[in-house]
Image 1 (tube, helix red, strand yellow):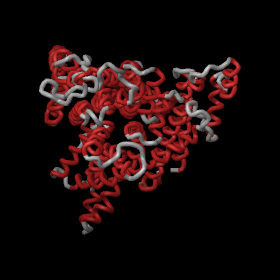
Image 2 (tube, helix red, strand yellow):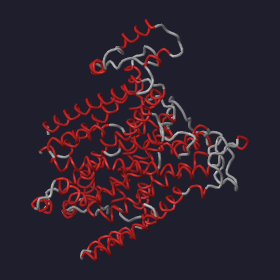
Image 3 (spheres, chains in turn purple, red):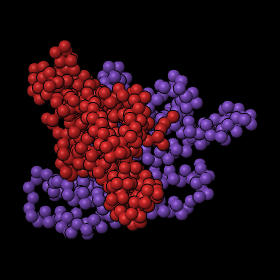
Image 4 (tube, rainbow over the protein chains, first blue to last red):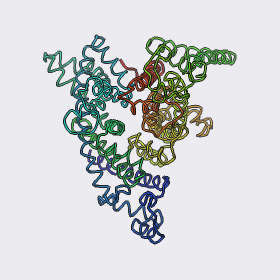
Length: 308
Length: 309
């Protein structure tokens, strides 16, 4: 298990390294000269340009720039925003990270709380009306584009009913729609998955044995069925992080939510590449950490893997 | 897959069967196809979805025939007009007929979905097959590449790429094609790993077939089932990604009508003209749902291992 984790960790580092290299290269190819963006409409002399080039290391070869950037990045210095001149990118990213993490954590919690019991219930009562309902939802939910759900919620709850505000944060009311939009797709996916994995477990011989030895139905479910059915869900949760982050970008943009997804989009629009670069790497870091955490969690809840 | 192309595929299969019969191997192939089709037919939602996508394909091929008005003609005096008998879905923020734009948008959605899927399938199949068949350092290198792509939230990678290349229809196709292939590569690699140990591969090698021939003639046909299923399930995802990119302004550019772009227009005028945003979303939903249902049906028909109870 330890060896496996170390291997995963090393793989993660390799991937992260490739990602930084790739992102940096991409930013070099990006349109727009950083000096033009910094200076804007102001008229400056050649000496001033040289001064700026020196300060940002823009006149050195790209690989030197890359390694300087990388070593700064590892030390937590993500450079400075070109658009909001002088503001460290790390400050901007950290400031935006809090709301995003909270948003995602709330969404995934709601999705889990709703979807897992629903999926298990559907499996236990297979072919019932409830089961069909869950299956219809599971098919429909994944086909609903989250940006459209967001617009429809705004039309209904902000436009027609006037119950919920449609932008920024503040009171709990501001969180309802963004969290709901992110959670809706996830419930569909998780409900289908937990239904499937429960069905697979429910006909196993050890479940029959548990029933045969006289355990109450509740104990059979809790100890034998649910515990085993949860395993695949844990695996998928790690993979869902990447999808959830994609959703965050769209949702934060629509609700003008001050998180990292909106910061990403506005930075792309304004050609603020230092910020784009930093956020891209941070996103990937999230995904890698989430996947390693999944492996770890998997080892804890499934003794068979720990032994291997 | 459209009703039309299904028809053509049927005819193709017939001709194939007749040729095979002449060559003395017709019976097995014909039954394999009709058996799969029989299994697919039993899943009614899949059949309905297939008909729906067939009709949409016709609309996508000849949109001009179905458009009641010009999709690009503006009419500022009537902008934001609510649905009427003449304009069943109303007019958009600069007075264009929403229904006509929806119809024209179908073409864009299908072009992007099919071409992006072709690109990603080509890359995914190649990488997966090389990785699984050769193993060793080839596999190690390619697998790190797949890991890297998979570590990106796809939309982040697409947005960055689209911004750097400059958004357009071609960019959208390339960007999606270059990013979604990693999942195909994973599946193909795993399947190839198991197929390459089978006896018929050894037999082929024994009679002197080279690696290229073994991969193309013996390994790939045996992993095609899961790939077709995965591809049909992925089309829906690609349509949503294209719509998301266009919605964010980094996909299909104005004035070309796309469902995602129409939603962006709708968003800008959500308070005054909410009707603009409603129909494009329903179209995306129905199309994605239909492709997913076809995928479910194909899974039952072609890939019994993954069948859901």
